[in-house]
Amino acid sequence: MSLPQTEWLQGLKAEGRAVYAVFGAGGHGKVVADAIEQQHPGCQVVVFDDADDASSAWPLMGGEQQLLACRSHLDGVVVAIGSNPVRLAVQRRLQQAAVAMLTVVHPRACVSQYARLGAGTVVLAHAVINADARVGDAVIVNSAAVVEHDCRVADAVHLSPGAVMSGGSQVGQCSWLGAQSCLRQLITVADGVTVGAGAVVVADVAANDCVVGVPAKPLKSE
Image 1: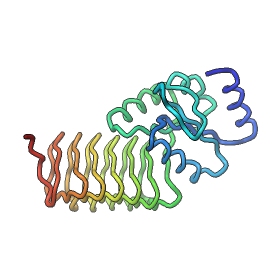
Image 2: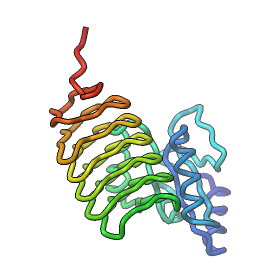
Image 3: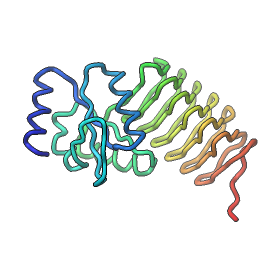
């Protein structure tokens, strides 16, 4: 990181302003940056991305190495990458480097005081997470998604807008629930599963399957 950027961050800290970083300058990164500003009024959001053509409405500070160089000036970092495995890998590298991870909860989300959210998880507007739900690290609970009571969500899951996990259901690591999909109560979705948009899952789903339809069935390759 260049000296002027470092001095700017130091100046913000001297003013008492919180500085939060988003890793990922794509569309999801925009949504996350906006949610951070709404959760923490008056903060400064900065963005990091390794892509050569990265651009952002927020100050773009460089890539992962630059983020590590200035981690002492950051109050928290969230990885805003859509790919579940990539998001989890980046977050784990940052955690190993002692970077403080930020959990983001949009002020218009509803999260029970009895729910538990992991590090680096993002809960967006109008999402609902109910009592005794357990949500892992680096999870995306997207706009208007629902995680009902006693659900278990493993690390790096993505619940797309409007996806619903009914009570006591479970989703394994790096799985993805498409927009407006629904899990029946007590269903288990294993690791690496893709549930298609609008699918209704009424039976357990094996690891790495892709299921679609109502009721949801494995997608058969041609």
